[in-house]
Length: 265
Length: 290
Image 1: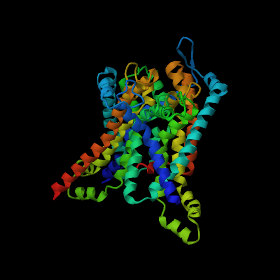
Image 2 (image 1 turned 60 degrees about the vertical axis):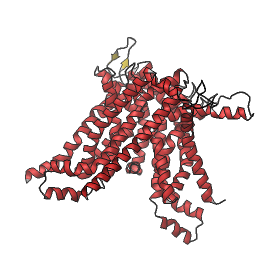
Image 3 (image 1 turned 180 degrees about the vertical axis):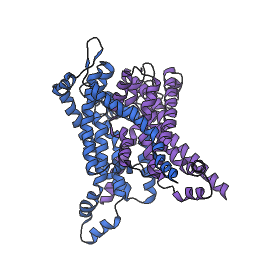
Image 4 (image 1 turned 90 degrees about the vertical axis):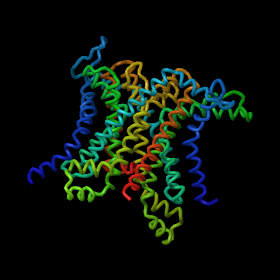
């Protein structure tokens, strides 16, 4: 057997290792067995039904959704402006600023969580949804900056200069030319921020007020009590949700791009 | 015209100010605060005694209990990183060198784990290794064992969970490095008489080091800072350093002590990041976002 086929087989095994456990979660979510574990006894939606009727889980889902959407909106706005400054301008101290912008990634999330929590407690601000939101904005911000920055580099400056030379003001140029060109990058950043926020557990466990659960902390709490069979169904919903989201976004972006091409013809 | 130039000079700072304000107020100031806070004292009544006390630091740095768990944490992070490096290099090499069509597909698959929740990927191992999990069910049904074996809740399963979580980071970083290598270089080495393996060892491997280093840094720092995996997949004796932080802050409510503990973790991991950026630059990690 040649070296290359050994590498190929090893690669397949590594991919199996990455995906098999998640596939088992999805498989067990449809299992009719009354304990929701092996052996597989047939196909059933009973665990999804149980999820739907579980108020705590539905509430957690709503909390996560709201938190994710708000986090994405805020940190994408902040991050896009910062990325614009970093790509389009030269200014003294740029390297320091660039390090500062990614600082939340370089600091372990636990430490970041502790610092923010204790500082706000010191200011007599109790744990709240607001604290959760602030925390999520801080640690998603660097990802948005990096993603938008990476894509922004490829947008050519000439187009903007052309618009300006034809009499557009800088603000007009931004909204009529730059922003539409940037839209895919901004969407990617937003999606990234949403998913990170939606999946986060490390910081969330520190920041969340008592009684408020997000989907990951809800799963965590369910794991600590006992392995309830609903967990697999909830896991399956999460997986499908977070995977479907970027796919849907990508196809929307494609449709929009096609329309634009069609309109300009 | 002069006003224009001044305006242009101001623009980047106007664009940056919301982000910088957010990071300063919600990250830099709180970090400075916990440095000060770690010298205060939590009294029995639950009030903080403001001052300059070394008690927390003496406890954190002097107590064997903390030192042992710190050592265990670094060991777990080290095992995780080494395994990720070895296991991750091969698929990264394959993806970088395979035909265009399967390459795009494999890369897409590689991005998937980033979209799948960490807690779900961690708990999924309970379905595989638990007493009523896939492996036990399989072993019983083919008659190798009669009763399920307890495979979970030890240090190995903690490392397993962390490897499963962090492997995509490693593969992606190594891939970025390998993909940037000019194919002519290995061909040149081979035409000059190197065997395929020699060419790999002398040309490809050294050129992929920046990616390997970036991936290792990410794996180590993320592994050493975790506290969820040990709770879900570890036993009572497999606590990691971040679990101590969580205990001190959330359970015991001893915030000054918790501050000192988190600063120890930060100092250790921060030192790694600083050494790394000194020699390799942070840009390498940013590359994998492109």
